[in-house]
Image (cartoon, rainbow, N blue to C red; front, side, top):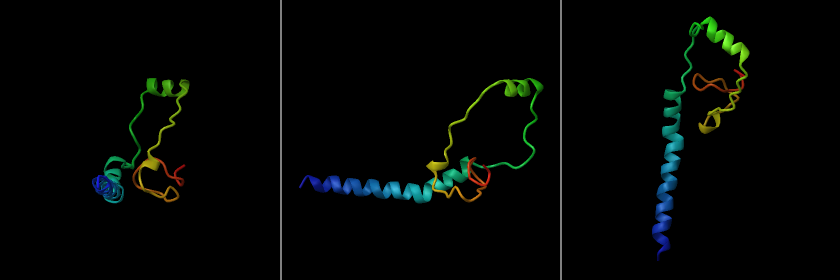
Length: 84
């Protein structure tokens, strides 16, 4: 009889995860990962010189955290195949 509370708990956790992935995650993704069109921020000559002399590699992308098709261009997020 001790298995029944465990099964109920796992079912509740499963439903909560399902609701988060299908309903909450897309809302959070749209609000936090917006792309702002425009010319961007002016860069100082010191920053431009640092940028040309530094070797920087960004190996971080949250694209796989959100349920989206990377083959489609999106208005939010910073990685999708059309923009790459």
